[in-house]
Length: 286
Image 1 (cartoon, rainbow, N blue to C red):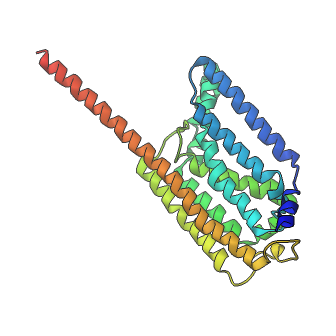
Image 2 (cartoon, rainbow, N blue to C red):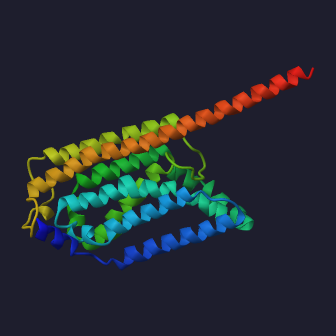
Image 3 (cartoon, rainbow, N blue to C red):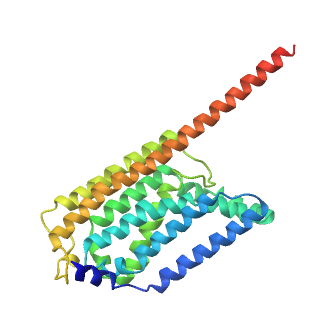
């Protein structure tokens, strides 16, 4: 066991493409935060969320996890789950579109930011029904077609196609549902909560099918391993991770959406109370 752990941790991947993109995203965000703070305030929790999202992406794109992701199914599944269920929503909570608006000059806002955010393309890309369908299709389609095994044996397909698709689909799914990003139109709080709850269905189905499958679903994993579980038990562990873990994580995002709903209702209640008090004060004057 000790030798297996040391072998796992002793391996790593230095992916220059991933590293450069993560560093560029970090520098842009911190530069934009500095610009935004020079003209007003900026919630530091948003910065923490965005940087934590980048850290999780570094964890699954660099180091031992990607080094073994084509040997062990559970390592590959860990990559996908971290990207889809943790890193992407944390990037959304960093509110990059709001930061872009706040850090831009007045001229840039009028010429670029506002027209882009109000464009038909952005409205289409942030439509919550469409983003739900895209995320579900990516999740189910990639696992139950030949694409998944093809990406496992094709390095370029994995790094330049599969991984970016998971990240983009998850980011677009969570974008209209949590956080406070500027966007053309936000769905109601009830819709957001329902959307997060309904996403558990394709996630649970995918995990259950993988767990209960009587045969090895992906031949790329059906080979000799230097240590660890055999291919079938590895597949069952991976299915269990998706089946059970996403239920817990998604419940957390649902609690956040519900909290935002309750907070919004509380603010609305306070606003009504103020209006009533103001009306009563005006009546007492006459």
